[in-house]
Image (tube, rainbow, N blue to C red; front, top):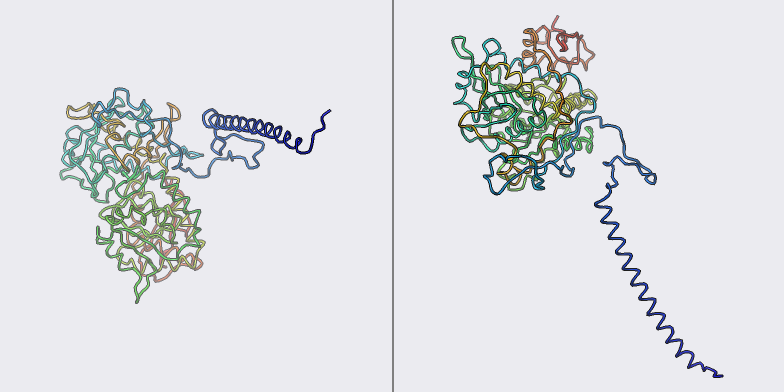
Length: 563
């Protein structure tokens, strides 16, 4: 029997050990390959076969302590960062880029996939907001005569484009180019309305002007004026007011669609509470477009005088070169007070200024857009007279800083009005009601003119590039929830006495009354004697003082005048 020596044992052990070691390495290597294969397979399955685990899925998992909330949001909010929906457009390389396909909007072109629409309000009201009542006033000049084809032809020299809708299909005829992409985004908004309410847009034929200044005046001899749609009007003109292009985006100055920007403003309001903001009045814009803006710049702080205002000039050419890094509207909610002042006509900045939760110091305006007529001095904003801006701004800021609860409540009311009553759902409903009431006045049957072109989503979006296409797709409305989707109920028009007082409260004398009422309230609501205003009467609107009664759905406040 052979007795192994220590050297022999060590040698054989090494052989066995090496063999075992090599086998083990092979097993480990195979195990690692299997593990990687299983891991990759699970990743693929998790990505493509099952819904992701996120708050947006609505799924509940017992091992997650904090479950997604199922409660509706208290305010309607858009979701600008959502993934694109499955809806898309057809942009064919074989046909002209501005033509309509045989079966539009059916293919799946990821480059033209829109984001989902804004979420509807959680508790929609059966009646439209009160500013819808102005639809009746805008159309009143034709209520007795109707609108004939001859009247419409008189508006053609003033129009940028003509829109015709027959059996739900839109047609367009362009008369002349317009500034930037105003016409494109306005037409895009109308196309979204057709998507939102298919089959509910009546046959119509209208003329649209995309410039700033209203031009339609009452003709002599009792004749009816030419019907012309545009973005604003004043007390002397009869243009029909329609929502402006910026609700769907203004790419030239990097202003995103309203549903996206409204959400960004809400987030900015949450980030910086009102009391932590700079205690001054803020305005940023181009002062060269109107004399009233140039006059406002005199209220800026200097070494000799501080009117409690911080005013900044914008050069949009330079801002574009900087890629608009210093003009983000959501970043401008950092002051306690925001100044609104019109430009050459009304200003689209109105909704962005009011949406900041900061009380708006609203400089008396000549021009009104479709929604500003629903804003009430003393309720939604602090009115500033045209002829005494600096003193009035300083008075408002100093009073507000010493009465933070009252002035902050005003800012909240104005902001809530913008985010709720100007939600995109209501913008589309306003468009629908206005076009429906307009179509009732037509005394002829609309037909497609020979020089009109088919209008569709593809004809507008496919030729576009860059931010223009990006904003078009971002503002694209989804298909209606159901085929019988209904808009809010259009309220009745104003009584003559209501209109008279609504207009009076926004005059110079009415502005003084509102401001005096708010200041008087802070002094215990005592009657003023010898105030110098020489005004006694009633002002419609929530003026924070006096007694109120309901008249025609509006609030009437009886103000105390001099004894």
